[in-house]
Image (cartoon, rainbow, N blue to C red; front, side, top):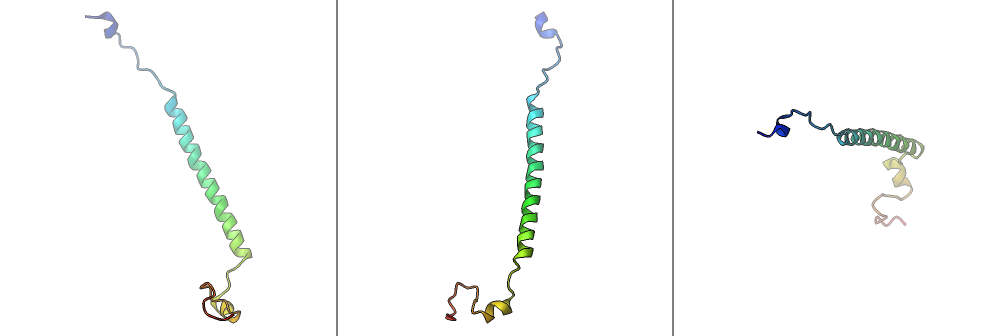
Length: 72
């Protein structure tokens, strides 16, 4: 019997999984913040530039189909 193999040394404790976990959590938090800012910006643009209703578009000769209705 080899005395070196019988010693019950504790397994090594690795640090890199904690760095990977921290990077994943940071990525999720940054993605949520980025999407929140993008949604807020999109809502602000939509509120300041409302889409014309279908009645307004027809009165100016704009059909929204690329101008193929022959109004011009």
